[in-house]
Image 1 (cartoon, helix red, strand yellow):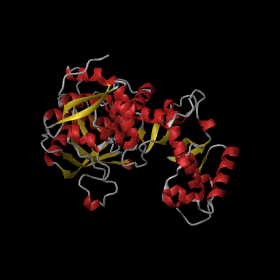
Image 2: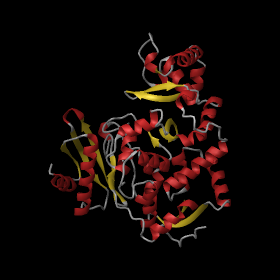
Image 3: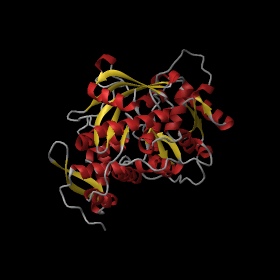
Image 4: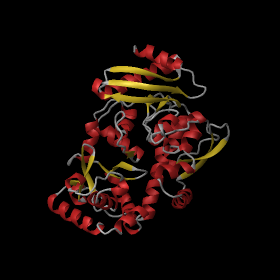
Length: 417
């Protein structure tokens, strides 16, 4: 049993532990399928997003940790028989999840069946819902995997999720309750099939109880965050507080949950949580063996920042996703990428990949208060941008004029742009 480290824990050690737990403390040496599998297991899940301002978020999250890798490997691990190691389902949002965790998603599927949310309850009461469900079940059973586009619709054009055509709504409902799974994506459109035709035969499909699933999710989040405030667990697991608190009580009773006094960014001390499995790593961070040496760009949907409380406590970073903010009111940009430099979140980069000309456009470059663009920062960020461009196949670079002018000039010079 690992001894408890002396308190208070300095901020540098908490940051080192958190970044190590998230796989962001140091660049990866190898970027192969095993590295992808290990990364997804460590994080618990990777959020899926459809936007293509640059590569989609699920690919960016892995690039931030692995550097240049082949995104086709992630697709194969998600969809290809014989190589499949992940599945799609709902966690914090639509997510890529290890197949070993499938049984822990089953209580959520059952809950969606037993207690559908208001929008689904309203849809199930519609006159066309029953016939749409019958049609979808019959066709997929007989024909195999199908997309929503494979179901004809002669009514008016629809698109928003609350006004899908009946077959699309039926497919999504059956997916939500676990009666269907996502077997593939074609042009990012979901392809639906029966679980028995999607799941490898080694997957454990014995349903976990809700209590087992809650404990699994909470322990996974504790390990993935490394060190955190209790509120961060709510944001990482997307579970209600009243479901997390009993798990924390049990873990404390079993000696698996430790509370340590830590320095946080407001200059005060706060009680943070550490899973006993992370105490060795915490001691290594205190001894200086774990040091954050990575400079990279992060996805707006980066799991390190799922919890704003986590970002505030350890980095004094106020993460903002401005996708739905009207353009005139945006402070940072449409799809802003946080900039990680060693153990600090030092700024934000507003990107755009202009695919027709293979140009990476840095539309804005912002620094956090108190950050100076010194030689090491500029050099290491330039290296990260070169790798980012290589990952995207971009051969040209251009800069916009928004943000910190001094930082922009230095970075342009370093990149030879």
